[in-house]
Image 1 (cartoon, rainbow, N blue to C red):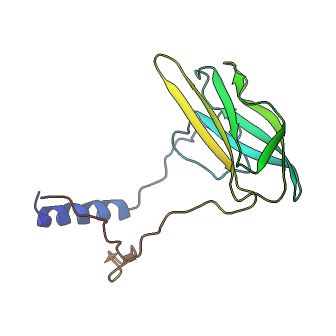
Image 2 (cartoon, rainbow, N blue to C red):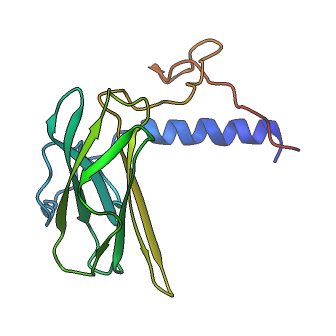
Length: 181
């Protein structure tokens, strides 16, 4: 495909997306699972397993955390939960690894108690995973002691804004590398 036809296809795609369509006349069925008010709205398929740390108690030298495991699929295999701590953190309560048998219960929680001389520079990592002959699942969550989640470099816009049909689509972002032609 040459550059001209790629540009024409891009313009047609953008123009098609900018058209308005009428609302559907039939009501949409409500979701079967109650939405978690602490999580943002999500459209589309969800991961079969969701992990998070819930802070129960926290001080300068001590933390009690609850590992929350949300199984979103009834077909998950038996799982194994493990916790990895930085070198300067000790697990005072809560054994690891923990075998989590296959169950219909959607949410399970396991409490852990940690001690440290000062707030650690590293994160406490929660890992849950399991496999069968036909499939596998693996998920991780980190407790960062209040530090923000690390973010990779953000692309910088370059060039003038792209305006099509009176709509401003913002400045373009240069691709990291161009495909071979």
